[in-house]
Length: 265
Ligand code: ADP
Ligand code: MG
Image 1 (cartoon, rainbow, N blue to C red):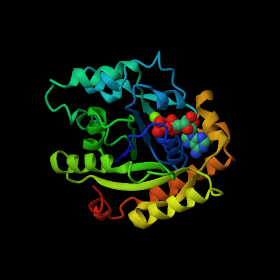
Image 2: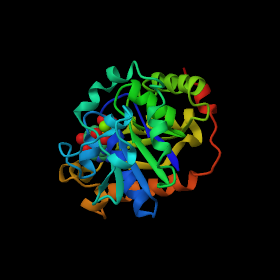
Image 3: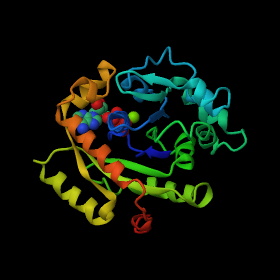
């Protein structure tokens, strides 16, 4: 079982879109996938076609050890993967977890129970570097970072990489950066090209070859409660996330280095 955290502390950079659609694309490629929603907004939950209101129990009860992953997981019918849902209740988790033992390791411990059930677990992180994100980094083998190719894209990664380093020292020595994914890419924009080149210079082969284009079908699909592959299997967004799934699968087992992290922060 490979656990990937999908993180970037900026909001609106395509984390949830990537989590839902990579989950569906990996499932389409024959993988057994669990998607855990760690954002109180519950966008991944809804994007996978699960009603937030009926989605109890959630990851919140899992973190508090009130239920197990097996009790809480639900099926995304259009996505062909399992989901640990989230809703607004999760916003209180930070406070509720503070005084609990091993508050950073609760997700990791909970996921260990289903290690044999899945090939991939994707963790859709909130847009903050809080205790939920730390739980994700403590549980994950690696972090997948979606980013838009715009000004300050690299500067924005400094805090994220510092947090990953701290977790590496304190909680999870094995954590790696799995890859940087360029999303909402507009090839006609000179700026996007320039920033994309900078990202490649800085992070080398950590940058996925696959680029996710700006595609309106990707933005429409969540309002229908579907991954894009179910909503419009032939659109550019579907093709891009299928390509990404293939690249992620190719990278499995490939040794990943922390070298790109040493240059930063
Ligand atoms: P995050 O989870 O990082 O906050 P989202 O995945 O929710 O970001 O994306 C933010 C917004 O951008 C959403 O409205 C989403 O539908 C839209 N979006 C994300 N990726 C794309 C894309 N490649 N093309 C078009 N719209 C996109
Ligand atoms: Mg999100």
